[in-house]
Length: 202
Figure 1 (cartoon, rainbow, N blue to C red):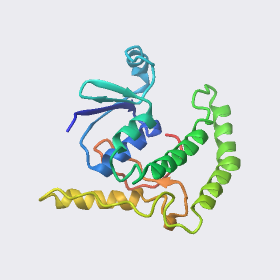
Figure 2 (cartoon, helix red, strand yellow):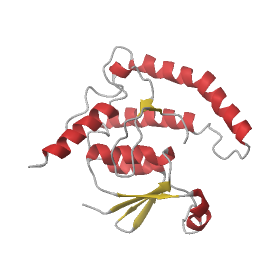
Figure 3 (cartoon, rainbow, N blue to C red):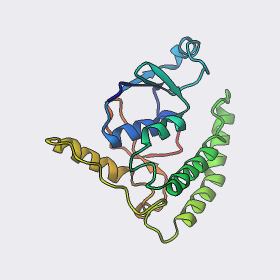
Figure 4 (cartoon, one colour):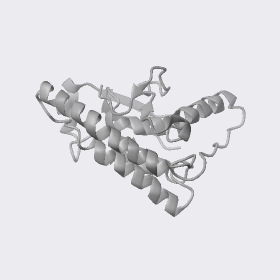
């Protein structure tokens, strides 16, 4: 098993999808969270000056979705067929298109708050409706299940945790009607109890 070190700010943001994947797959990793005050020093050491960065046995990978796809390759999260993988990528990219419209770099807080509010108030519901239409009468957005991972011998506690994550991560399941809610992942890799809106910002 490779050694993983994830570096990102001390917030959810672009790294949370990676933390979810680690939690679901029950993979140990170092969750290195930096403060804004240290960012300029860290940034100067990165080839593209952006995070998250996932260090895999000394090799740095960048871009959150590329990292997510690397981690889910050959797992039940990536789709069972090439067509399902393409469909999953399309859903992820659709959500990323929306997330990319948020004014992350805006310096003036009042303007930033206004733009966030407008996107969540006027554009967010349209996205949810599109996702709900895409779901239709199906049980899952892509495929027909999330398969259980094979349990390691003697690891019943880990298996129970993984199955709990699976229920929490089943947010695309019809029972939740694409409500875009999620549970934040704590620094110890567990999923915290308080529900938060997916599109909210720390």
